[in-house]
Image 1: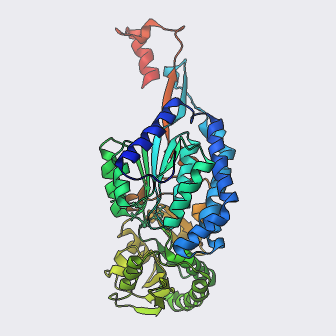
Image 2 (image 1 turned 120 degrees about the horizontal axis):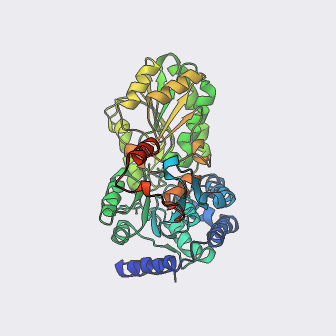
Length: 459
Ligand code: NAD
């Protein structure tokens, strides 16, 4: 039994069924874990057309956009995890200090138990399956709650997952906030949430009742700083592309640009050229009328000049808009945009750009375009963000051994690769001492010789 389950009773039954499976010990073997990962890989390769059709229905995305955004990152994560699993899961040897010898110390990665993954709608497979890869690799049972705003993708996950992975250890529960709330009333051993800061706070409060550890993958306003020595053609092309991927509905999309005065006209001119083709090449719709209206609202009351932004509410199509010099206190510059609107603000110099960034909440991503390594290092040292990417955007997400996560209001904890494996593992400290050697000087009362020795080796 799997698939779509609603209502507190069914939810309670699902969680206990998964707990029974976990307690039986079957999820612990590396063979079981590999089978699950291979099942997910088969699902994504055999059923890629169904995945593409679901994303087409949910967001109007095309098949290549879905391959790049939802399929390829997960298959790459699975392949990387399969190659590294044995090493990640092995006990990690720890050297004992002299005063603790003899003995053997190890860190033993241990599955946490039954974990909950709550996903967002913008990359509905990526944001549920990628954490599930790490959770299963670490030997856990997993409940997945996809977003109700991507219903075709949620239904597809509920239908396909039980056919490709162990249905006694993986369940998909579909529904909205009420279902999420009912799930969070259950006891889990880890909760992994992707979504807004507003709901992230609700999730963390729910976790407090059982002291459940949580990972929060949130959003925010990710800035791009463009220095006067940047390659402006490449910068404009890459920024325009990253702003239009998925119609700007990406957590690490560039939110706004801070450009040095000296190169502002040249950058704006190139951005307008590149936004034009990039917008035409991107078929993705705005997810809902409510989000369309929110974006529409952001385009007024900011005091800047708007270029582009043609839109059609019935079709939820929104062409990229560039806004020069909006008021930093306007909603456009205060809220996460999460759509194809790109504010560009001039700053007299890089120091002002850095001050602008550090005066605001730590972003999920920070981008810099500059030809200078010294500038790249200096901006890195003076700022903080979940990730920092120089001279490109979004690709930091795809480097398998880089942690992915925010800091402060942009998130708590991280995943991807080994970081994901460790997130879903308890790193258990194990010390094993022999009994053959048991000198009396190690016990009180300590004589002068023992004191001298212990002072030398213990402190
Ligand atoms: P959201 O917070 O509205 O919803 C996320 C999930 O939480 C959904 O599954 C939803 O059903 C559930 N939910 C909604 N209300 C809830 C409640 N009261 N209690 C419990 N669960 C509830 O976010 P969204 O609109 O789906 O996604 C957009 C946000 O997610 C943006 O802020 C974006 O930056 C962020 N995001 C972050 C990442 C990341 O990896 N850091 C990735 C994608 C999106």
